[in-house]
Image 1 (cartoon, rainbow, N blue to C red):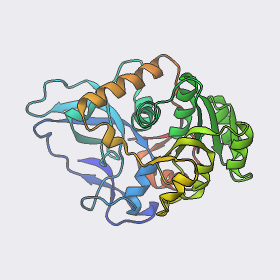
Image 2: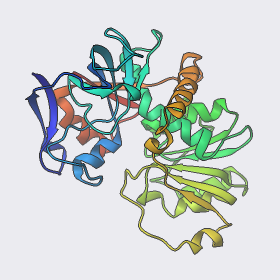
Image 3: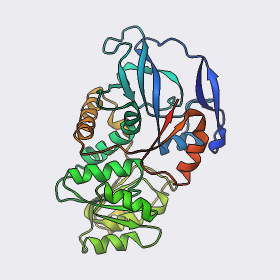
Length: 324
C-alpha cells in the first residue's frame, strides 16, 4: 500500500484526501517510480475543481514529479531500477509511488536534485516551448511576462534575458516585483495599481511588445492586446484569474493584425523526439546557470490542501514542491 492524495468529487482544496491505495506491478512498457519530490502547478487546481474534466473519479491530482525507478515492466529497455528520473504526465503524481509509461520519463543528471527536477519539468518545458517554439524569441525582442514572479514567470524572465530579449514583467506586489527583477525583468509593473497597458506603452516609448505571455487570463484581457505592436503575438497559456471569455476575432485585426494562440504543453511533447530535444535545451540552460529554478516552499504530501489554498490565493512565488 502507498499513500496518495485522491479526489472523489470536484470542488475546493478540501476535497483532496490522503488515502492508502494498492499499486499493481508495472505493466508492459511501464516502470514503477518512488517519488522523492512532486511539483505543484496551477493546472492541478483546474483538474481538482473540474475546470478541466478528468476521465474518471476518484483520481489522483498532480502532473509532475521526480524520483527513483524501483521496478520495470515487460519490454522496458531504456531504464533500469535505481535510475533517477523525472516526468510530466497528466494526473497521478500526488502519491508516494506510481507506475509511469517509460516513454514519458526523463533521465536526470546528478547535478539536478529531485526537488529541482520536480519544480522544473512541467514549468521549464512550458517556458521552453513558449520562448523557442510558440514565438521564437530573438535578441532585441521586447516581451511581456504576466505573473512574472510565478513558477513559469521566473523561468521566462531568466531565459528571455539569456536570449537577449528586453523583459517587462507584471506582478501583484512590490515583493513579487523584486523577485521578477532579480530574475531578469528590466521593469516590473504592479498591475493592481496602474494600467499595465499604459505603463508598457510608456516603458517602450510607444513601440510596444513583440509577444505577451499571459498565464493570468480574465484579469489581464483584453489589456494584453494593447501591449502588442502590429503583427505581435498574444500567447494565453493559463487562466489563474479565470478563463478568457469568447471575443470577436475582429478585435485582433483592429489592434494591428495580431496573432493569438492558446497552446498546451502536451501538444508540444507528444512526440518523443520533441520531448528529448526540449528537455536537453532545458537541462542545458539550468546546468549552465543561465536559468535557476527557485524552489521557494516545500510541504509534506498530506499538506496538499494548504498548498492549494495558498496557490489559489496567489500567495506563492516560484515553485512549490510536495515531499512524500
